Length: 228
Ligand SMILES: [Ca+2]
Ligand SMILES: [Ca+2]
Ligand SMILES: [Ca+2]
Image 1 (cartoon, rainbow, N blue to C red):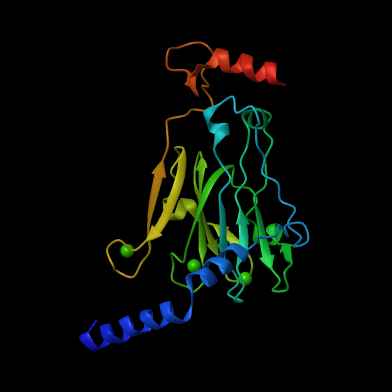
Image 2 (cartoon, rainbow, N blue to C red):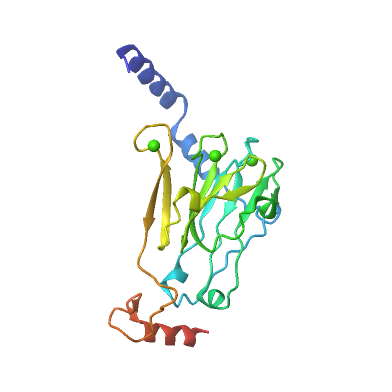
């Protein structure tokens, strides 16, 4: 920034501070309110959860992405759903959801057309146009293999995880698209959490490391049962 630009910037800031009293700014800030319009917007999605959180994996989930998947200028919503150990053992699946922003304050559930419902035990989601076709794609982190969902540009998504080689099978939580080497192609950074094998769950009360919130698994299990 040149000296002349700096002068203009300083003059602008002085003018702003002069014209707008602090009390006015504070008054406007206090006047901001948020109204929950979820129901009237047509969003009925509910996260699957386990209130007891018996297992650490049941204490995490629930990612969401606001992105314009169809490039109509309105942000749409992708909601990542999770699982519970009980549901998983029963071979029951849950559904994530994609809501299309109609532009009039209402949303339409387009999950079936998008083909983005079944992503397993989801955690988080990253948005990026990894193939530079002008349509944002999704990378969903999961307990188990993650998913790269390619936006086909017609309202549907294709799971290209295997072809792309990005199906990390561990427990992934966060992820981000970035072009770390400035070659014009988005790269992917994935963060993994603790080692957790859903097929070898720890027995409560067994083992000195089976602790949760300062309590042994056995004590916590008894408290959870008592609170029901
Ligand atoms: Ca849109
Ligand atoms: Ca794309
Ligand atoms: Ca790159």
